[in-house]
Image (cartoon, rainbow, N blue to C red):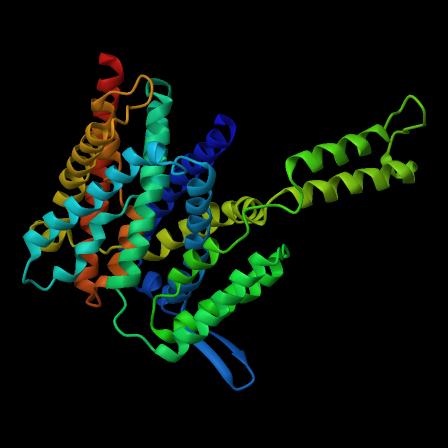
Length: 430
């Protein structure tokens, strides 16, 4: 059980450090060469098919098209965790789900209290998110001193947090709906459900239907990235073969490769029977793997090492006027985000996790203390990717967007430092 989790942590921590690098690069680039930075991301890119044409800026293609793949992978992770992971039972899911709820509600209330009635009130969803890649990358700095249960708790919490963030985007950040296009999307989703029901396992079918759903959501006025989550939920999580059938077939194929009774040779190409046998084993592996598993592993590298860093490079370039920085830091949007993420996140996560453990009699993981939970709650205040994404949905005024981004970056750095100190102290005391 721990091997796939370790692979998951390794991928996320590595991508987290890459994300930090591209963020710093974006800020340096935007402040040294602001015109070049803005000109590149606002360059129009068009896709035309006959008289049909879809034209958007490079920034919009990244935020609305490439980030759909990011949300698609998030959806696959959510489905896997619900089926067989840390969210697969009430006992397993109780603490991280309760923590995620508290980590969304309390920050939103703090931000709303500070910005109530002001022009920044619509940004209440910004401090609700957690960036799992950044959080686990920071956690990796003291990984040997932290109980393994904290990494599992933080990952499950962030995945539950992602579910909540997507619901917030779909329900509260959709200005208007074109119902005819939404009807088309519903029909295509029905097609996905039928393909799953009739055991269609060709990923091309799901890819074509997914692209159609993305276009329908784009036309309907609902942010197209929500389509990524919905499509992921319909990806089959069962293979064509069960494990018993795979074992029987693979064992029979392996017996044909017995080199004691035939010449194996230095290359498999010299023995056609062995080549056919290996290909049969490969096909059996393909039939046993689930489409969900293949897609998650196939897309994960592209999302973590290309799409998310590219998103950071295009969105994190905040031009800072150092002479007026104190004015920016003192506005309600920036202040609300900082207080919500730095104070609201750990407060909400720890309090709701504690309540759930008492009410449901759900114990903490082995060697985990409440100080560890509070430290993990601080790391959950790193809201970078999702928070910046929701910022783009909340505000149209570039100045307000910059104020929010400065708040997000500042709060993320403060949360990272505080979380590291508390977790290190908690592990030392334990």
